[in-house]
Image (tube, rainbow, N blue to C red; front, side, top):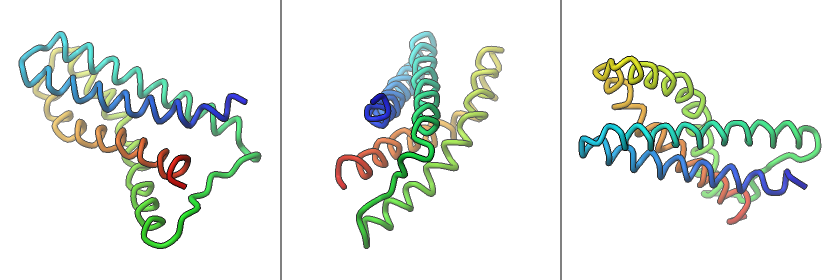
Length: 141
């Protein structure tokens, strides 16, 4: 029964991570380091919870449920394009976000900034496309 709700939870956690990232970005642009740090740590926590929930879902449904995108034509192309960019980028942001946190924790803000300059838009893309994938699979079938 839990497996019925996990995809929705996953989409919500992805969306929450994106919102927190956005507010963290706005905070650092205003020079509010403390606020930025809080938003970014909460974004990391939301993404970590997503990862745990996502792995749990796939562990529980393994061999029982196979997720297939049902539409054809243009929308099928769009779905697979989004999925094929979302998945490798989602994998890539994990180590780079940890490296960025490492540099921030050790007050090496130039290296932190160098990583996050490209990490932020990639992480935002992964958060947004995660929600889009959910919508395409479960809502707009």
